Length: 55
Image (cartoon, rainbow, N blue to C red):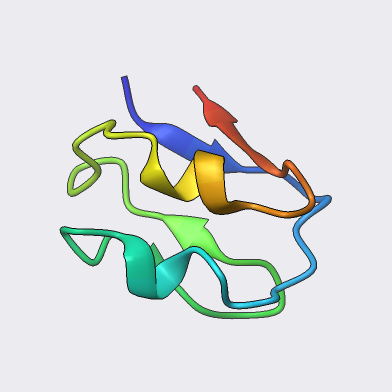
């Protein structure tokens, strides 16, 4: 199951470089491509605002 980023994302940039498959795109609120995400959870573990969770 892919991870998603909620509206509480502050676009701090912590998660994107940690994604092993580059599934996270930058923006005002970051987004995770569900077709690319391998559900490893690295992004969720690194998120300081706890904005990333399983879909």
